[in-house]
Amino acid sequence: MKRPIKKIKAYTMGNGTKLDIDWVEDFDGMAIENYTGILLDSRLSPARFREVAIHEMLHACDFNKSEKVVKRTAKEIERFLRLLGLFK
Ligand SMILES: [Zn+2]
Image (tube, rainbow, N blue to C red; front, side, top):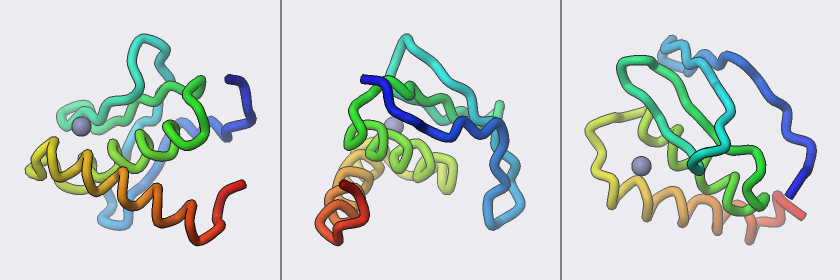
């Protein structure tokens, strides 16, 4: 599904960590600790893209969080923001 997504190349987190943002097509997304980057597939559905973007940012914020916690939290945040009417 094609839709406009602003493809930024870099993002500086509030704690000063600089992330390289790259775009992939082989998998939904990934946060890489040593590379300090996030990979995202912009072809995902809007809801899935948001969930993956939130998911990978949660990893980048704390690589010690378990996959289970990150997955559950990302899904919950995406759902909550959608219910607030932030997305069409
Ligand atoms: Zn994960």
